[in-house]
Image 1 (cartoon, rainbow, N blue to C red):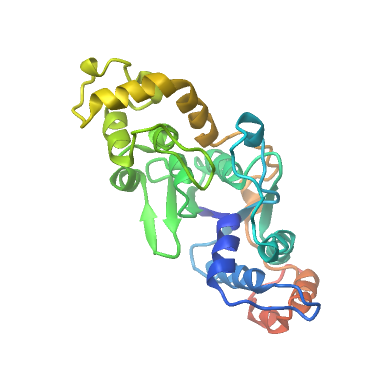
Image 2: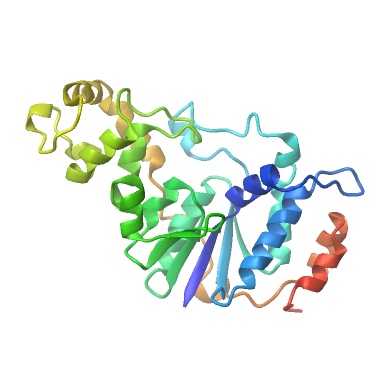
Length: 288
């Protein structure tokens, strides 16, 4: 059995910037919502997709904004995209899919919690190319699929892509930074140097201050060590920001994620609202 956990926020952003614009009768932009509905229906149509949940950032801000003032916010998001957050969640629920709408936590935290909870009973397939989620990968029990590029990443795949194992991804992100999330990383550290050092030491806290004791050869080691000594406090904070939570209070059990069909009346209403009534006829199964 597989359980598919979908990064709905990524899907919505990708749809907004990649799918054609569409305007409903009331003048509201709905193109991204139409696209995500088509995308999710396509996923549900695949033979091995039986259990699924979609996580959304209901708002962009989370508890991490209280930890670091520079962390990402909803400021600057195109209003035509922001106005579809709530609509996309309703559309997904109308398809009969479990929705995890996050306010205090982030969508990635919900996915990380779901992966931890269900991996002993099913293979968890995380549908997202987000590098943050690579830390969730566990052997072949929890894998990541980039649906757009049709690539699957198990644990060896994560190591091949980032140069570190999944458990070191938060440390790697702390050193190199993540512009999407708003923290800059540590000066002088890049993806290759961070991967090389962490491939030996695993975690920031285990990297010696004195580069002379490093058991790995890395270019500009003295400059890297000096920078880390000066900025170790920030690095540890960035690591906390990059570490996904596994304790989001999700109420669903694995059986609750089984897709039993769309909710006909809700789906009809959503499709009328976004001007896509023909979509209902493409849905193969209804629960009511």
